[in-house]
Image (cartoon, rainbow, N blue to C red; front, side, top):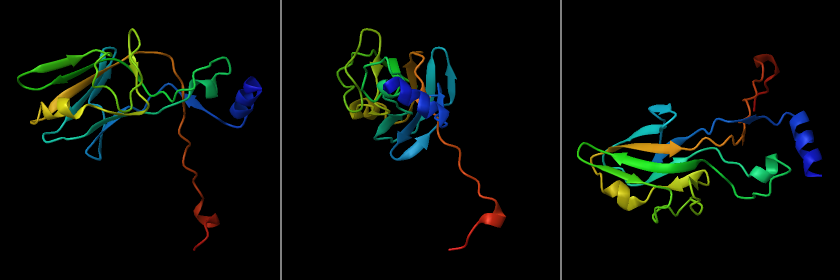
Amino acid sequence: VRARLTERAASLGLATTEDDGLYLRVDGAAIRPESRDDTGVRFTVPAGARQVHIVSRSVIPADLDPGCDDHRCLGVPLSGVVLRDDTSVLEFGPGHAGFVTGFYAAEPTHRWTSGNALLPEDLVAAMPDGFTLELKVVRCGLHYPAPKQAEVIPFATRRSA
């Protein structure tokens, strides 16, 4: 039944993407990555930041793959987090005990976010003058539902309110 539902969704235009749409929400403001390569995704977090959320697309794998039994809502898998300022570097693996809100339990090589994970506030407070945040994202081949394109209504067919 799930396989038929998956086929039907695809025939109706359900599109997926490997783009995780990763960004930060710092005290309510969106911050896009400065760079991304095979070693990680880098962001600049401004001075005085208090709350840093790691935000991405998310998916329940079982919803897209009929053979999968994983019903967690997964964002991105992180193998490490690095905070760097002018004087120090703080590096954490997936087992760090502070990764709680929006994180799943650590696995041997990585830790999944839920699509909205909160960086521990004590780590952010340790670098009050701003810092570079590097997220070491593991390539996993996960597909996320693609965002729908905005519908464009030609001017001639618009109705006034």
